Image (tube, rainbow, N blue to C red; front, side):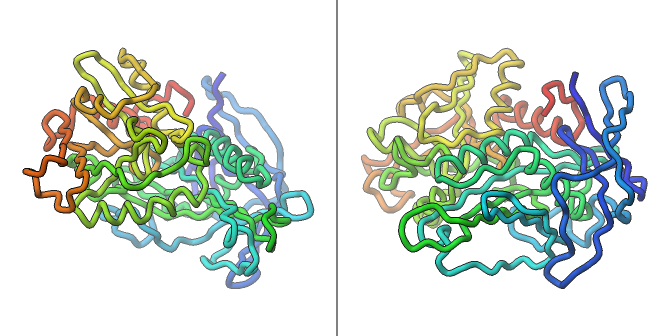
Length: 421
């Protein structure tokens, strides 16, 4: 039986998620301009657990509650033109790992941090992060999309770079607390926006020799966002095949979400954009013959003739939670879902290509250009230039549109969530 846990706030606004609700806790009084209080974890809470037959069970109780938090979408922002960028909000949440255990939750208003100059994150790249979103539904409730998947993926990143794993329960409590505290910054239903959550975990303890830190800091920041690429699903973007840089080595850290992966992409990403391509596509580092992934998102090819949804399987590709969701929907739609090696020449067989991930959700790609040694992308006469065009490159493909509409409808509560996401 799937549980949907909801909490009725004292302001008569329901904050809900599909995994756990923001608990009621003790009143938090302001302490300083930087920190507004400590939240003990685990919580002593009063929860109403709503099952599919709307029955209610008492889970735990607390002696006091916090004051009303407000209503989603009431912050003073232009919700229709958010874009995907950092914006200050009410608070961020922090937890410190020290002496072998995780400490208490702390809600902070200060967006800056003090860090030791010998921190392993600065010297040895001991840092990883996640990305997930909270959406306002038509009834005013707020739901976070598949946070357990993010908790798991964060744990795999931590294990790979020898950092302590944040327990799933702690991760979910942290997500609830920070969304509840920033409820006014969750974009209202109908705006097309979402509250983006960026969990960050890094080595904050000092080490000069190469070894794990003795202290770690977990920060959960939030910000309201719109589309990652300007225009979102409005029109396909043109991609560039990156051949002079590699994103990740076959047995490296490409399959986990560590900070260094994105540092390696900054130069080719900027070069691609300077040539007029907002997105870059990487090949495998070993043979340069197989498609791997876009700069910040997974690759999906649609072969409509054979009713196939094709996405690369590689130890260097980061598993995308959005891609995983789209594969489930595609399979339910009757498509043949193939997660396998994708040869470069196969690009010619796709009539739709899309980039997918938490930030972009789905971005249609109209074409991918292989420049070779040519510097000018307009030099179409050069023999080294090859352009893969997918269907009508100026229009969104029907499969892309349908998959996008389905996942967005679930995220915004417009379609029944049969998957328990």
